[in-house]
Image (cartoon, rainbow, N blue to C red; front, side, top):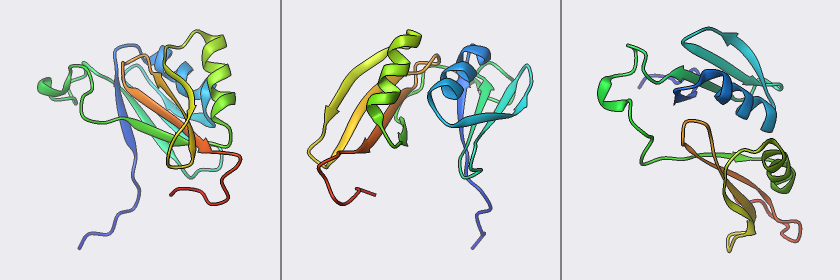
Length: 132
């Protein structure tokens, strides 16, 4: 079996600067690489990576250049309400305002500049065990 060395999600974007602003403003990402076709983001603790690629670039097969379907990206953070406040003040689209879930997390849903659904969750304050 092949050993996995790293895993990274790549978002296809039609506006790289807007996507970079969204993810670096709301989450703990710094820019590792920035070009006109690809941006590589890495969390400040070097544990998480996110790529943003020009959705119309030749590296993206034509049949995958439409709106994202069948997935969403989740970030489990310390305080989902704080991310919500930042997103709201920045004018980023809110799909669902923060709500407590039946499985013990507080959750807010956002839409990134590429129309990808972004789930931001945190452990509810009155729950003793995190859902992993």
